[in-house]
Length: 344
Image 1 (cartoon, one colour):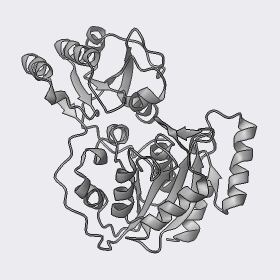
Image 2 (image 1 turned 90 degrees about the horizontal axis):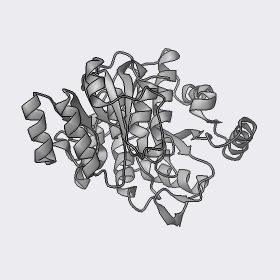
Image 3 (image 1 turned 60 degrees about the horizontal axis):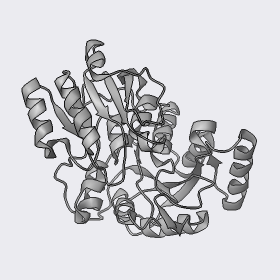
């Protein structure tokens, strides 16, 4: 699957994907997402001595990367709080001194470090902070034209971005106009643009989504990338503002089976699917009383094929909603339900 192939990159490819000392696949999810959805932009990976994951690209240092024609090093890690630790800062400066531009989507911006800014200046290189939001309005909740689908989840990192990308591609393959609207750092790098919702002041989150997904009259869909979970004590505020601003006509619930607690919060158990779906529909009805659930997307990467299919069928029967793993099984059944609910 891929995003809109016509979308350009705002950060000049080809890329060296920086994994640093990422300890698992989720810690390197930005690099992994780029390698999967924009392989034409990704040439190599940079891994630190303690790195325990890979995105299956050639390992390359910054000097060799520049000699190989690579233009930009993308900081492809996602850590708690989005911090630029000392090791990352040192590696960024080395990349700039080697002649690479550097792009990052972490909360702590490249431009907040005078040593990084000075390295960029002396080498004539550019810094790209993807989590620098534009000025956006306060939300109004006014009804606007167009069709919108939002992915929501039981937890963080449950497949909301992947599902949104898959659905946008599948809608286009069925002859419907569809645009992926990125709301997080990985999605923004993949799409070439978007809005980093978790970098907005809280009062502007719903207005930011209204800005990101304005009125459209071409019969097409805006497929909006979800963030966080209404049940995650750290990030529920972003999730709620996103639900209100999206004014979604359709919701797809995303879930990673097998988790016993919220990511990063071992003292909070994972909510069940029914409770999560009902809560998201109730919140979404504030700005669109006609919102409908059109499917459930599972991330079954840790399950054997037979168990994954069995779980999908069980949930489908319990909820009366098409249930699929978008990466494993595609999204045809969910797309069929979308067409049935929203013929056009």
